[in-house]
Picture: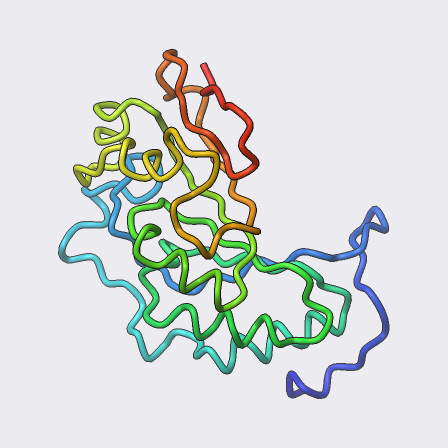
Length: 203
């Protein structure tokens, strides 16, 4: 049966009768980090074969799927990867998803490495929330975990000392920091989320 022919019988529910409202969409299997718990370098090395780009669902196909799920009750979409910001022209997909009737929220989970240069464009396209995954607030620990030489201070610095992110497009958006308690430094941090409230790290 074609996607567009799916019968719309109302919201889909799980075994506990909870309605399906959220849908995660992976836009790529690639990532520039080689986190030891996720894509360790000894497995995902130079010779590892990722999906050929022509095998990835196109933006049009992803939008069709999202439209079908919206007809079944989905109201929130979250874009993931791999690292979703590696998908070229991601803002075009976000704009297409934002135009779907019934979709009320579009979020993104990212490692933050490419966020500074793309945040405003993504927000203008319709992105409303961002989750930045930080395994540690300590540079040395974070670099050891991601095995890519990327310090935690770079994504964390977008918020440091400011009541909101420097990118103008995020003025009305919400941002969330996720940090693994097992790996995070016990030192308190001084970043401030978009709400302006002071934050402390997970110790």
